[in-house]
Amino acid sequence: MSLTLLFSFLFVIKITGQEPCPEWGSATSQKHKDLNIAKNRSISIDSSQIADFVPLASMISYTKKDDSDWFHNGEYVVTEGYLINAIEEGAESCNCNHAKKSLKNGDVHMYLGRSKSSKIKNCIIIEITPAFKNDNPDYEKYLILKKKIRVTGYLLYDFIHRKDALMTCNNCTDIWRKNSWEIHPITEIEIL
Image (cartoon, rainbow, N blue to C red):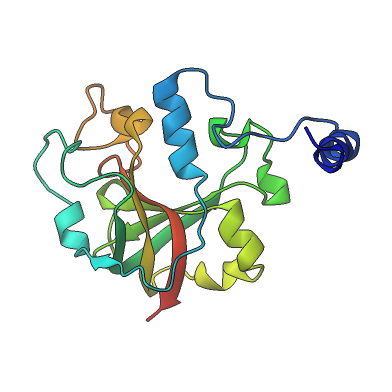
């Protein structure tokens, strides 16, 4: 380890009182580590990278079925819909449980629906990450409810939320999403 890296590491520990969070967060199994690495991926895009348009309707089925093979993890996409809700999140495995809602230093869970009147359980989740916030300190300007937005980012199958998704839940008592596919992380948002 270089001296500069060692001093940087010690500085972070001294200032925050905790070790820096690795890209796999606090996950212990390889499957969960891979998920956190995908959630924490860079939002820097090569100018030659083109996002594939995926109609929001193709991400929202009204039939209860397994959705795990609909898309490919990591596919770079763009879609449009209405922002139904946006919630600052706090401690999660991907941030080593260090984030706090009050500090706004975690992800923002956003609910994207097909119409202004979509119910939460009929929305997909899209997420602003701390990396997006660092590049866009004025990110809250995108959090206008009932506005139509265009979102670009990476598809992610968040398998830990199958129990929370209307399409895949077994004990459907606490449903807050349509399926387990997300656009996470978001790399760009446009208000239409």
